[in-house]
Length: 372
Image 1 (cartoon, rainbow, N blue to C red):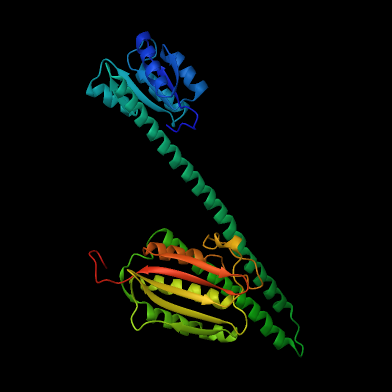
Image 2 (image 1 turned 90 degrees about the horizontal axis):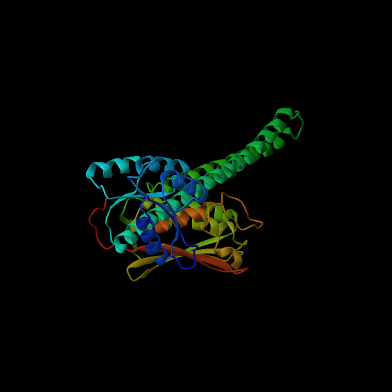
């Protein structure tokens, strides 16, 4: 038991006074609160009023038997653990008690250590169940928030597209109509691109959550991946007046999933371009670090304030700036890819001077058993 926590409550239901007294002394000495009851009806009243963590109930009692008490305790709260104690222990009664909802079965006579052990086991099971329930509640709350966020994120560009199309529908044929039409079509296409990026990132994140995206573990030439990503981003870098550079050895082999690694590098390079200054630069370097390969993506951009760095890899988090935009999922995806492959990612940054994202990945050391 945690000495700082409030003592857990145990209710003992037994018609034998000596048994109630013994259980009280043994459990109280172990730090539990104990309430004793001499029959089933009194016990159920105490359970309903006190909501204990665990109930010890004798099977053979006048009036309500222990077998009748068990399901009624479960009706009061399914979080209460029920342990049956009896001097008439048989396999059949044990099975019947378990079917009724009892956690365990303790035949009389039993030693203090046996009682303490079975109570501790029952309470530990309850704690695990409560933690599981809490985690499930948090997941449900997160899902609701996610649905709300998704609805807002989808609605914003759709409303804008609807407005742009309404303008186009009412656009009169004038001398500058063609230019205006192109402008509004471009706005629609930009919003559609935003929607596609959002959906693409959500699908990637969903696959990673289901652990079905990064299952492959093959030899990947990181140099080829980086060169391919830099070539794909060359046009947008030129449009933003950002120079792309790379520093890599002739061979830098990692063990992982090629598609996931491409997503990771593309997200990091894309961010480095997006949050850079005009005439800035992005440098991608790769080095061997023991049993790992380190990929570093450095930029000369706006940098990240220290108070935001701990939140950077959270889903939907974005640092508000003139370059803000996107889905807020890119770095969350990067972290999931890196950790799924047995690696890590962290950031170093200075406001106004730029940022460096460092990713460590397992180096390729030959095919291992189970590689696909």
